[in-house]
Amino acid sequence: MRIRAAVATAPHTPLEIRELDLDEPREDEVQVRLVASGVCHTDAIVRDQWYPTPLPAVLGHEGAGIVERVGAGVTTVAPGDHVVLAPAACGACAHCVDGHPAYCVDFYPLNFGGSRPDGSKMFTDHDGEISSNFFGQSSFASVTNVIARNVVKVPENVPLEILGPLGCGIQTGSGAVLNVLQPGPGSSIAIFGTGAVGMAGMLAAIASGATTVIVVDIVESRLEFARELGATHAVNSRDTNPVEAIRDITGGEGVNFALDSTGVKDVFPQMLASLATRGHGALVGAAPLGTEAPFNIGTLLLTGLKLSLVVEGDSVPQLYIPKLIRMYEKGDFPFDKLIRTYEFDDINKAFEDSESGGTIKPVIIY
Ligand SMILES: NC(=O)c1ccc[n+]([C@@H]2O[C@H](COP(=O)([O-])OP(=O)(O)OC[C@H]3O[C@@H](n4cnc5c(N)ncnc54)[C@H](O)[C@@H]3O)[C@@H](O)[C@H]2O)c1
Ligand SMILES: [Zn+2]
Ligand SMILES: [Zn+2]
Image (cartoon, rainbow, N blue to C red; front, top):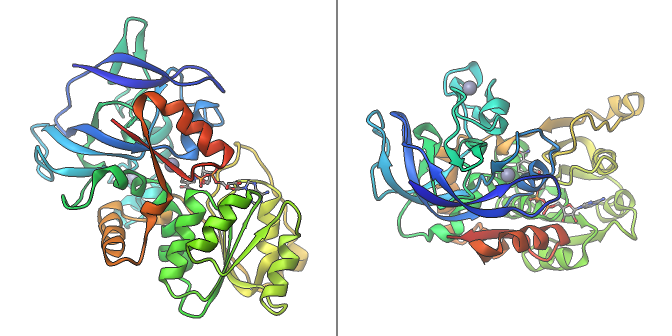
């Protein structure tokens, strides 16, 4: 069938909106008509080839939509169901079976490989095949085919226009906090980077009862907004040393928990230096492959710190995304405040506004 999609053609080049042919859903696939898709920083870095997904490619990995057709072997969803699309995982390796699909042994090829597991690509145009199945979904398309295992059924009373980002950015930041760091009531946390990932982590920390919530960024407007959403302290690390500021705020001790959502190599040692003795830090920001951020093992040993490297919030999307929706409905997780919507034709403006810091979570509406 003919569909419309935004195609990444070259690094640092705007996406091109084109008409493409979408092939038939396979036996284990679901055909989904997208209602909306979030734009994540990871779309921008793959467009720019930090990770070498072959171009041209249809990116997009925060899709939300309505099931149109299902393959003969699909029993978990039916046409008309509202769904959020989650990252792909094999479902069979030790990590998948153990409830940690973000660490699937095939996570990289399934999500960044640019094709189905069998090598086929679902999109073509007059120039030939176009990489597809980005994060198992390629959601910058009006209609797409997704393996049923990566589809999360969601309630119909919550608008699909806001739900797509739960599939990546929002589950990444919040899951690093709720599933991995698990700050208890009365605890302190520092969040480095107040994009969608960091802000989701911040909202999760507030929902967990953390009482000292420090945000660090270099964009003043984002820091101000974080304070409106409940951060207790904001530090602009463009003009203030964040480690000293965090030590001051915590009476010299440092924070119990920290989240680095920047992917900036100089921020990682700042996060470690901000932690109190036996603190726990999580790194979620993506850096170019090969980036090194050395740390001082001589000094750090005595601190008993814990460090976690967290992919996709280490969640089981079919369990975790409905949980976030329940928290949202109760008023404990107002992630919709991070969203600004864009028409599909304005997708490059959405990327620009995310890059400049003007929009925290752009969502494309089809
Ligand atoms: N681990 C995962 O599974 C996963 C999933 C989704 C996204 N990511 C990655 O997480 C990161 C955050 O994503 P996002 O959508 O929130 O991106 P974003 O670009 O909106 O947010 C990053 C924030 O970091 C801030 N920043 C940059 N340099 C800084 C510095 N020196 N000190 C303090 N703050 C600084 C930026 O101003 C920005 O607000 C990206 O690297 C993205 O690729 C990882
Ligand atoms: Zn993402
Ligand atoms: Zn697996």
